Amino acid sequence: MTEHAIASSNQQFEAQLAEVLGQMHARADRLAQSLFELQKATHPWQSYLLQPGFATEAAERLGATFDSPFTLAGALFANLDYGEQYLPGDARNTLQIPGLLAVPAETIALAQELNASKVKFQQLTAAIKESLSPRPALERDRLLRDMLGNAGFSRAHLRQCYRQILLCPERPDAVALSWIKARKSIRKVNVAWCEKKLVQLDPQGQDPGIQYQRQLLAGLHKSQHNSLRQIQMQSRPNLQVAEIFRDKQEEYRQVGYAAMPVLVKSEGDRTLPEFTRVDHNPPLSQRRTRRDLRIEKTPFLAALRVHLVSDSPN
Image: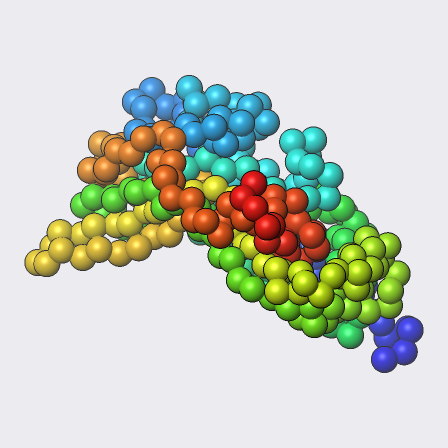
């Protein structure tokens, strides 16, 4: 593809990004306004928001309180950009407030429209990344970020934009809530696998951080070659939400993990259906395996989340 063709393709992508993100922000603002109006209603709509430490911190960063749960949820749904509340450039950070909100059908429809925009945006960014697939990963990310900037959305937070709002568009007879503990995956990896992955991250050898990690790997003593472990874990426990319908036979339907408030369709009484109460703070895990204790806390290869197994427990 010629440079002219590449520039033309990029301009088309930027125009599409501007359209999709503009639509997404407009729909998020309309949903937030709808929730704000529910908060002001003379006859209150029922809510149930949990307040673990990470949710309390999220509310503080959004400048809202749990005394106004619908306003708080609206601020969370509309938060689609990086702000001072995020570590610079850390796309893994998202604000999370689990719980339930009773809302009318009109609000459900607004959330569905916003979810549709989120899907469209995610499909578009996937197409852009695919078009850039011959380039190194770091360059692909930079070019996508440049396109977002040229489209007028340089601060777009991809993970915030992708997150779907969970909905119960049909009022269930009951909602089941339960905390699912954070999961950790530990697997043994070898030097060749680590080297291959590091090269894939920086095939041109232009990233000093990746090159330093390749040097660390090359200097690893042979006696430690069997001590490499990749650790993948969720940052925090999830609130699992399921609908229960009690018609002719009880039907249990999984809604998903509620990082944000689940919107539940309500009728004229403005209440939530029957639901289980859980502690604000997820239960602490009592299990610590011996292999966890022997893994060094500081990663050996940060880019791959690879740690070394130590000779003695930490």
